[in-house]
Amino acid sequence: MKTKCTFFVIIGLLLLGNPVTAQTKKAAKSKNNVASQAPAKPAEPKQYMLTVTTLHRNMDRPDLTLEGWKAIEKEYFDKVIKKNDLILGQEVLRHYFTADNTEILLVTMYDSWDAIEKASEKNDALIKLAWPDEKARNAFFEKRQAYYAPNHSDEIYATFSGAKNPPANFTKEMIYYVRKSHWASPKDGTEKEFNELRNKYLNEVTFKNDYIKAYYPNVHAWGANNTEFTEVFVVENLGDIEKGFDRDDQLFKTVFTDDAKAKDFDDRYNKYFTGVHGDYLYHSVPELSK
Image (cartoon, rainbow, N blue to C red; front, side, top):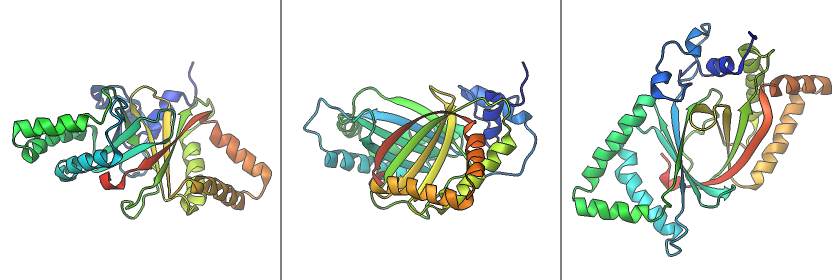
């Protein structure tokens, strides 16, 4: 059955700036993907690749401290991450309110999928330069690994248009509110309508909300759930999340003073999502931010 807008076509259109829509690097490079078949449109902001590694604190070592963890990660950050020009950005986020109090997220930005592999190779070279003595190198990484449980998971995302970037890196601990929504399959949906609705909301609400210091939307590229749409809202403290919600409502009502028009906007925009989402709160670690 042919419809005007299936789920896979929508995802392809949303990822026009970066054709990484499949589960493997080979598929991502294919010239026959859905995005390449879409009609030409004006240039959009460049998309970058994000790897998100979920690590876990070692709960079997109560003697290990937060200060000790920060110190060893800062040494690695200064000697390796900061010197790797293929790593465009990094954030380390610690559990605040999530289902797992051991979570530590390592979020790393790259120019492209190829750069992920090349950055890893460069990390290896920088590590050998920083710790040329093999025994000293092994001792450092043994000590570092002691802070973590052996299990971890990895996801790869593509950045999405509409980010609200801060003028510079945050120099103090911030709260990262992460909302994970899921794409729906509206038969009457179009790329044009979705972009118009989303851009209107961003320009009239999100970008004007001073409580939101940064906003980062990302879409699935490789991982467990291809319907995932992740939005990250950065605020200064926990109370500003609620204040930010209230400010969103105020700004929305200044645009849609008529209840019927507001409902029409909500109905048309929300059809692109299932209505199911998850919420997660993290502390940032500014000392490890690039």
